[in-house]
Amino acid sequence: MTMHEMWQGADPSGEPVWHVLTADKTSTLCGVEKPEQPSRQEPTDKHCFACMKAFQAAMV
Image (cartoon, rainbow, N blue to C red; front, side, top):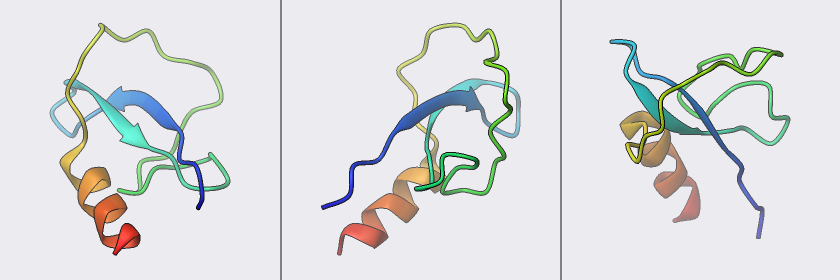
């Protein structure tokens, strides 16, 4: 079983959300590129719906 790492980024509206990173950790399951430098985000408990949907599909 592969471990997936979470990364806090933003959704299309700019709201902070947690994304699921790809295995190479350069982008997310929904296609957002992860910048090299960490971004300063407000704390959140929201998750990217597209990432979670892709993650769940991969687990089936």
